[in-house]
Length: 288
Image (tube, rainbow, N blue to C red):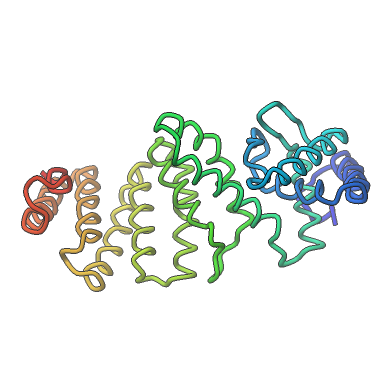
């Protein structure tokens, strides 16, 4: 099993076998602890907030606490008052075992996504500054979940979290992480909804915006022109999504130094927004 895993070197494989024995022992004492470790292995290795684990009833919290203490006693995790960390080698051991033993079973990744989505949704009730800080803590773990949620036509109900995290990372200026998340969202929407669904078009618009932030302007232009062709045909010239994509296209053209084309796009968008939305609408003002 370990020969085909990401583990490298005899020493690492030896440690992996030892930890695997520990997992079997723990499984006999507390099966929930092994289940919890499989969930933890889906997240980024460091600074997993303890308060997202077992997001639910007090009984679940107690089970989590007992499981964490047991895992810590075997040095499988590191505990602080607020966070959990899992060694990358432990994550590799878990990944190797899941690949070999539980093909097709998504229990741990699905639970990891649900717990994280619950915590993200709860952060909406926080004041803006606290909400932003909370999501900074959560977003690296959302990115880590991508590798555990392959693209298919039946995405998990909490897959909306990837889009939320992409928007958050873009607003934070973390364009590389935003690109990873936005690309995953687009792939999910394409598989589940098709090329011409409004959500797919919205995902392509977001990806183009991220590409602009990364300075990859030619790619952003190509993406926006492809989106616009579908938006015009499916949604119409005056649909807000069509106008939004034209506005972003204008900013990309300006960045490419094609100022006359950028001006023509902005004037066309402004004309429609004045007529449809009125002079004082925020979108109209943005186009001026």
